[in-house]
Amino acid sequence: MKICRFDDNRIGLVKAGAIYDASAVLEQLPDFRWPLPLGDALIARLPELAPQLEAAARDASPIPLAAVQLLSPVANPSKIIAAPVNYAKHMQEIASDASLHQGVEVKPIQSLGLFLKAVSSLVGAGEGVKLRFAERVTDHEVELAVVVGRRAARVPRARALDYVAGYAVGLDMTLRGSELRSLRKSLDSYTVLGPWLTTADEIADPGKLGLRLRVNGEPRQESSTRNLVFDVPRLIELASSFYTLLPGDVIMTGTPEGVAPVAHGDRIEAEIDEIGTMTVGVGTA
Image (cartoon, rainbow, N blue to C red; front, side, top):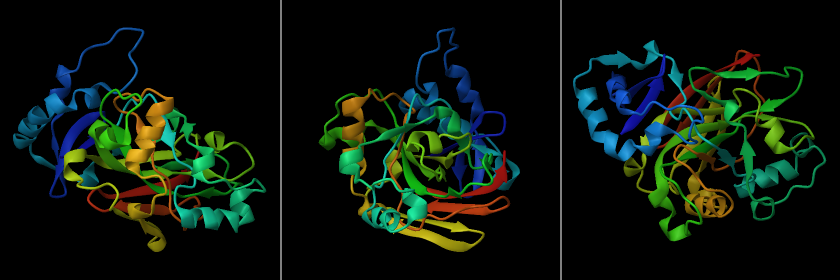
């Protein structure tokens, strides 16, 4: 199942290049009063609502994908967790390019661990990236994004995938500079998730997915999740040893080599096998 959020927070299923509106199912989500609970209510109830989403979509008319604005398929993550230098060739790339490491010692993920991005940085493919500091370099980074499906704490590697709701294409946009990663990667619109959520049952092995990125049609990044240093189960094990993961939390798994700058007016195409392709415009804030 491929679930998208679009336009005015509507929900649809994506089939054969079209969207089938299933927003009526959202009426079954509870109305919350302050203080609001953490986590994403739709992702938390996805197992029980999935058949109803399918039923609602069967009764809907197709909407062309080009006719809607795609939002992030996850509306309310409590955390966006990211994995630094999680491809060996990307670590080599950073170490050999002063514009990437900015004079800071390059350490492997085994030493760095994970870091957090602001949830306010999250947007969908249709919203685009907005460059806040146009005079500074912002690089693209395509990544497999993992969406947590249920509460998880101290999850062993062997059971880690049981806690996954689904996967999406992720862009971890990066402002280059000497500041901490969590600051430079948390600007508004610097986490792009889309084009939809592909549920975990459709991905046989998240460790065997090709991923690629093009800018204005020019190939920039191409690799496979086979090359992850810490694979998806290990990332979930590590993250859940430090934090309690909640439904809708997003784990960005890291980017391969080939990162490069983008500029106002660019069009980014980010693609992951079995999930889909999202096209993201670049503007200025």
